[in-house]
Length: 607
Image (cartoon, rainbow, N blue to C red; front, side, top):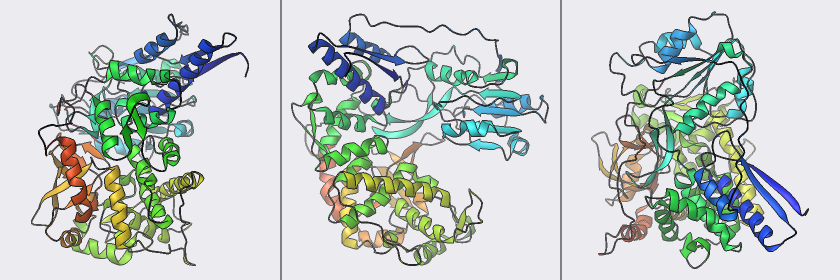
């Protein structure tokens, strides 16, 4: 290579695992080469709209005593109009009131950051004007997290609103419109390492000052004249005492980040510098220590003298490392797929299960038993959805049921059906989204290809002349799959504490011993009579992959998969050992359960 080089990295203010690993690798390479070869000069720079992250600054100072900071001059622009949302209104009501003052035939594009705390709003019924608002804006009310679709949607004429994900980043400018508005929010929902439960949970949080400024920055992406740009904010939007911005490598991606570090075992020890700075400066609640213990406890890694004190134990390690970026550094999914299976067929079934997790279980189907009874729903699931390789597993878990419904719905799709159509089952009690199934099928192919490239054998999914899948998962194979699920999700176990008179479950998180509310895709989509009969009086146990904190502050789960008793008996003792319940010495890191400092306890409003 040339003896002079420069790396420029776009800084990620959320510090996702891919950014952190890239930054660590490039700085280690550049620093090592510069120190060992006098004829080499390599510079590393990060670019960001905000100030440099203190962890990044510490890393740069590790390699250079005086890293240089360049502040790009701001371009002088016409000021935009700021509107304060009154304390008597929701953000939607304030926007609706403003929009009606404009020319009704004018082109109006709105970016909305959803409010997740309106606990102050006690003066009137919530969302009094919701119906009027929907009538006025529909059907151009768009909600998506696909920031790359922004350019397309911004070119649509008339009125349209775009519900923007909390920290969406887009690479291009928005098309011009007659009017452009940004509806900001002081709160957002994030997936974090929750201190209340020591689990990965989606909770409502107060936005950091950095996130609030990022919302404001969208005014610089539009080509609309500045005189027609409006930003609606709550009082004190940029003045409140805001919490620091969270880092994903200490939240939802902490396990994947730590596991990914083990791939760099042969790199210079200085590669650990970034992780050490993160731990020393940000990890005051010992999250990384907790997660390292979990990786060891799950037989994914073991303690040694390697960099960061951990080495990967799993057999298919190259496949595991290749999987991590595909599954957003969710190490549970990656390890589940890479635990050696009894046959290529079982690996293929596991890949179908994992493909749903990559896109989100709730996106596959919705269920509401109001139009028919639970017994008729289960009869429908048994008679109409018992198909494909996972057909016999229908009713044993949310994801198994979702796969069965999606496959059955796919056979009903016709070429003349418009995008976004739904397929109904059980007298409209179940609504299935074929488009979501297609979005799940694409990652299934990608997961299988990645496994094969890394020498993990995966059976090709075969179909008959009608397009139906060939083969079925046996009871013995299901037990093996559950062993792998429990090994991958062993710390996300929900146990049934009792059944109601209607036969529906009440659950508790095994790790934190806190009650869990079951979403409709857990309560109604599973065949509980079959599960209870098979459990034969033993404790009914399953794993969940997603927990959320709901309107009342209680935790809930969106999916649940039954684990047979024969599998659970082996694992329960290991979890007891992890928590120190079977001895006088607990390895659980302290402090235990505490509140999140930046959590917003208010009322979540949905439109």
